[in-house]
Length: 113
Image (cartoon, rainbow, N blue to C red; front, side, top):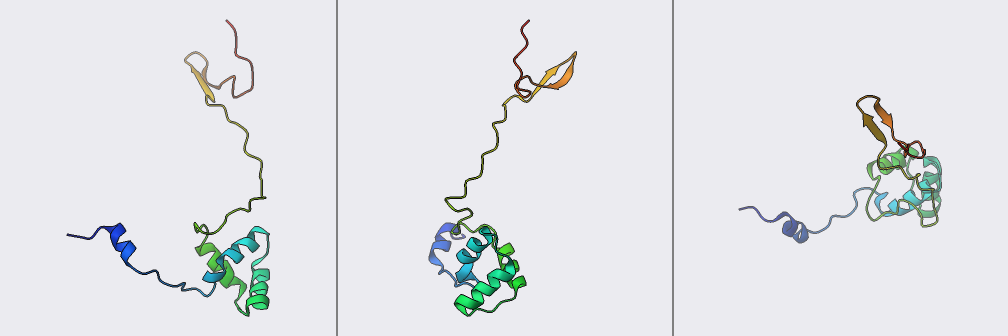
């Protein structure tokens, strides 16, 4: 019988980062959110951490680690407008008229018979 995958995962030790950029993932994500180029990120790493990498290395790392759960995707202060509310009933089908956008989708008042 095979062991339970969750139990097995809990028993195995965590491995260290393989990339030298792994410990700096939060910094890289934050700099990208601030619109820093890959060259500028490489310069920051060289200046502040004495870590000399080519901008393409930063690019490759960033693309391989796009959405890690422990990395913030947006800052708390980055508020984008939410999309407009879309009506639930967008289309109306009448056998005589065919498929048309509903009055709600067109923001019209419903027809009164």
